[in-house]
Image 1 (tube, rainbow, N blue to C red):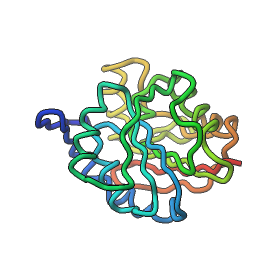
Image 2 (cartoon, rainbow, N blue to C red; image 1 turned 90 degrees about the vertical axis):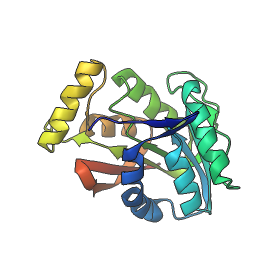
Image 3 (spheres, helix red, strand yellow; image 1 turned 120 degrees about the vertical axis):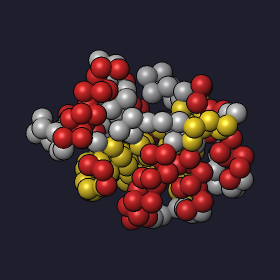
Image 4 (tube, helix red, strand yellow; image 1 turned 180 degrees about the vertical axis):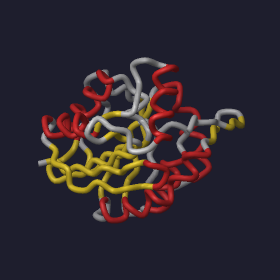
Amino acid sequence: MTTRYASTAEKRYSPASEQNRAPIEEVLRGCFAAPGMVLELGSGTGQHAAYFAAAFPHLQWQPSDLPENLPSIRAWRAEADLPNLREPLALDVQMQPWPVSDADYVYTANTFHIMSWDAVEACVDGIGQVLDIGGLFACYGPFNYGGTYTSESNERFDAWLKARDPHSGVRDFEAVDELALGAGMELQRDFSMPANNRLLCWRKR
């Protein structure tokens, strides 16, 4: 379950991003139905930004990530050449203030298990600050429930993550939901996704 990148100059490629984009798109069509601006956190290679901006022309898609990941995002943006795909922003979730003051939607995929728990806390707090009232936060990735892995593959993945970085790991849904509640968001839907992943959707009160 490791992420492998293929690179051509600055443009990077993640097979996992290619594989999960269609199931995520199906869910987001219901969640992100109204026109608005989407802040994507942890845009990574930039593949999702290019794909979803094309799939959702009614949305302004704002990619963001750490500075070292911006060249690949820019390469995907240049290739896509879409009017609703914005220039990526340098955004570290633990650095305040964020370079975005408000958003109708926030989306992130496969980030919470990479971040430290302190970073997850800062991220959810930041989302609560920038998300407009009634706005939606969609988060894709693996989660534990009741302190239990949902699959053997997720347990192996968690062990691999922690061996690589002890501060990372598959997060407990209940702990993340508690952070979201504290940031003024209520869970709307919990979607089962392929490969033992979930897509969680919270609404800002």
